[in-house]
Structure formats: structure tokens, C-alpha cells
Length: 128
Length: 159
Image (cartoon, rainbow over all chains, first blue to last red; front, side, top):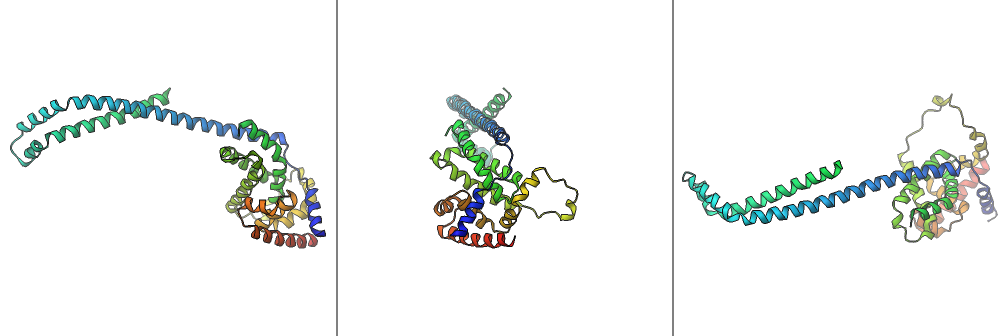
């Protein structure tokens, strides 16, 4: 126990030479500022991404609704095109799935519009 | 915890923390300061996970210990001593000379024993607190303390 006290005393009087507290705190503040700047950039990126998603979703909804309203015309157009094809298994396949083809075209167009609007709005917001 | 509270916690703990790290790094105050900076920045990034500001000090020691251990793991073998002939020693080298025996003894202790001894004797933490900081059982910490104490005594007597 006596020797434990020796160790305690040894470490109690331990005062190594270190950089000044002011320099240490100044360096730390610089590091904290850098972290704050990175945090700001990340938050900005998230905000921009959220906005782009909302814009893309709205555009997708509008274009999807518009194209849905046009489905009967699309079905007619596909049927018209199918009649112009020479008689074959392919022409029969189209004739049996005209409505499905029209809906697939609507879905593909809506997805393409949404994705492109998302990319464009993200790029536009980055440029600002 | 707000930024101001964090800075105030740092100001209140940094001197003792750097003193502890300097001993843990066997007198290499530059490495100790680098580890201290890294630890505080890690703490700053994760400050929201700290529930009670009262536990800041033991929390930062725990981060410091883990940072020190990762530095040790990443350490490369030293250059040959002959290639270090003409390097000028800093002015603080003479002042640091008074702890040469202590640093030489600490350097020969395994890192876990060194950490336990320093936290117990220098920072006056209890075995329970140390076990939480270094993520080891109380029994293991007692063993590290007992072995470290014996080793340190022997080494200091030899010096």
C-alpha cells in the first residue's frame, strides 16, 4: 500500500511540457469548423434531394394522369398499327394485348419523365 | 448538448486529458495532442449520443483510449536509429528528460496495463469506471492494475 502511494505521488506531480491550451483550442475550433462545413454540405445535399424527389413525384403524377386519359386513343393507335402489319404470330400477339401494351407504354413514359425531371431539377439546384 | 456547452466541457477537461495521453504515449506530446484532437472531433460528431453532460469526461477518456489503440494498431515499425543521427532535438527535450525513466518504464508496459495504471493513479478513476472506459470486465482491469503496478515498480527500481 505504501508503494501504491509512491505511484500516486509520482503521477500527482506529473506535469509534462505540452502545447499551450490556446493553440490546442484554436486547432480544435478549426477542426470543428471543418466538420460544421461538411455537415452543412450534407444537409444541403439532403434538402436538394428531397426537393428533387417532390418535383419528380408531382411531375410523374401529372404526366401519368395525362397519359392515362389518353389510353383509349393509344389503344386505337396500337390497333390501327397492328392492322397494318402482315398476318403473323407477332400481329396476333399484339391484337390480343393491345390494352396491356398501352398501359405499359404509359408506365414507361411516366417513369422516364419522372427520372429525367429528378436528374434535371437536382442539376439545376446544384448550379444555383 | 450545444456547441458552447461542448466547448466548455472541452476546456474543462483538455489539460488533464492531454496529460494522460502524453503519459500513455510515453512522452510523445505531439502524438498525444493529435490523439486528443481526433478524440474531441469524434466526440463533437457524436455529441448527440451523449445523454448526460456529466459523463463527458469519462466518455472522452473512453474515446481517447480507443483512438490510441487504433493508432497503435496502425503504427509502422520505426526507422533504424542510425538514420536519425542529425535530427535536432526540440528545446522541450531537456525539460522532458526529467520523466525519461518514467516514460521508459511506461513504454515497456503492455498498453492495457499502462492505461489502467494511468487512469487509476493519475486520473483517480475507480476500477468500475475504468472497466466501462476500456470495455473490459472489472476483474480484467484489476488484473491489469495489479500486473501493471508490479511491472512498473520493478522497472522504476531498475532505472
